Length: 520
Image 1 (cartoon, rainbow, N blue to C red):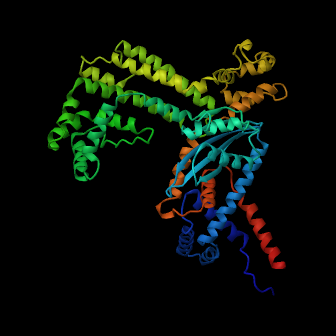
Image 2 (image 1 turned 90 degrees about the vertical axis):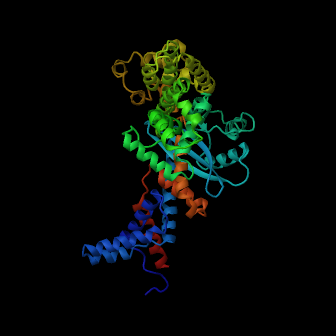
Image 3 (image 1 turned 135 degrees about the horizontal axis):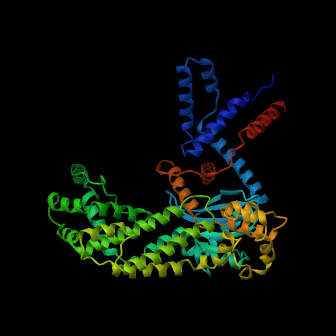
């Protein structure tokens, strides 16, 4: 009999332990919850009168130390799969963003978007790297280079997308400039969603938004719980369209539009509430809510903010390539031209709130707001100049069957001649571009195929980073603020990955190791 080694877990016990650890990590739960899961499983089994299965549950190792080890091993398994995908891919792009966690540590998120020869796309976390010193461009570059080198370097990189911080976008000392200095010559783009949000800020109507914010704060901000409850009850009593109005937050993309939409719809009820339920200090706001000019500005700001929110929602979401995102932006730019022409005629067809106000107050003239639309158009032209440089490539990618061949680069012109003359491809030219490009034979159209793969591999925004930071804040919270860097990386990887952790493979390896130790 061998002395000194505990009995190894059975394959079923071991697999159950890994499955629970994976579930806890994916849902951002504390590792100590493993013991609670085990206790609940035992009690459920006993409730069903199955003492045998209850005994099996007792043998599953789910201490917080065990769960931590399991999570690290599962993360390593996913990392191995990712390295294989990166090695096999044709191109990849990178999305970078930086944010500060609950412990005031700057965390750099690096995501990769890969594409293989079959146009299969993966979007995965490469690494979350803490920047414990300064967060200058060189610090970000050193951290990024270390991460990318572990996966084979920048050779296949088709695009790098960053947030708008100066340390990222600076052409000399920022990451963009340093990448160029080190021979990384792929396009470097500023996140489309950040650009869109900055364009929205060109609306210099701060007086209107300030008044709206102040009124909402008077009703529900600070320690005004009683007044807020009275307001909610008042809205119910009068049968208002909404039951409340949300507070405005500058850091939330959709906040202004939501606040304005509710406020405009409740403007009459709010005026009534200020007049009858709140004493003093609101006379200025009561005057504004009765003034044609203020109501006209409020209506316009509500409508244009809602248009921006619709665009922002289209830009959000994973697995959108750069062509799709640019398409949303181009569509909105055309709408802006339409909006400007309509408002110049005082035509509020595309502005529901303005149309409602015109029905009530015929004297209001919205034509002056066409200049505001013109300012937004100019801002879009300035901010999306980098993406405009890719316009020719987008046109070829989106419509290869009807593009003017002579206007395209010479290296693809002969293949385009064959492509536009192919009977089968002509019959499929109305397919979505991503489906259409999959139809092309790499042997017959190698250059066009390579071009399409590169475009499909490109990130257009850092949305995936933004959504992952939300997960990070749930993981590394007030009660878990001492979480180790490696643990945070493992939990985020398992929370965001598309890969399926190979638990059976891990279990076989662990059992083999245990058997080898016993035989020694």
